[in-house]
Image (cartoon, rainbow, N blue to C red; front, side):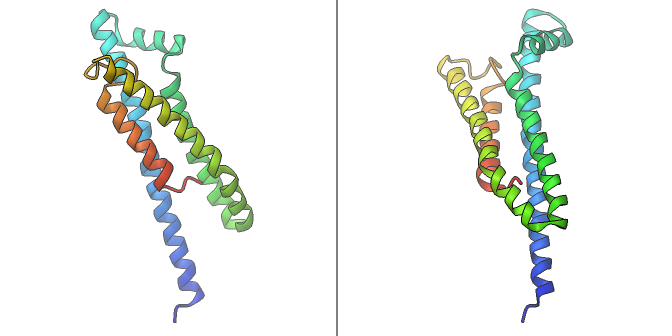
Amino acid sequence: MASIEDAEKEVTIDQKANNLLLYLALSVNVVLFAIAIFQTTSYVSDVSLIPFTEVLVEYVKSGIFIIPTAGIITCLIILILNSLNVAIGKRVPLLASIIKIALKIPINLILLMFVLWFVWTAWTSYSMGTSYLTVVYGTLSTQVATIFALLFLVFFVKKV
């Protein structure tokens, strides 16, 4: 028969595996957002013959990169909330469960809004025939990869 200690160890292993998967999914999304920023800045820099850093500073000041930057910040907030929930869960498991339930829907809705935004930008770049250019947030392949990575994060990973 399985003892209570074995069940607790199994739950702990599941939580650690889920946290590792969450950290991996968040890392992939942060890298994809950063690639989108780099590709767009690099393309504009090459076409306009303006130095890379000047284009990056101008795009940041004008707010063009607000969506990828917000995506990076959202991933970092999810990471912090997960770490806090794990720390709280060690002392007060009931409170950790309540926090997990309360934050599940808002986090998923925010991530789904990013998905819809990237679907829209991918569709517009494809429909304009500029799928090979970094028109908005990287090439079409970067946008599609970001969409799938965000969908994986929404539907297959426990965030908090």
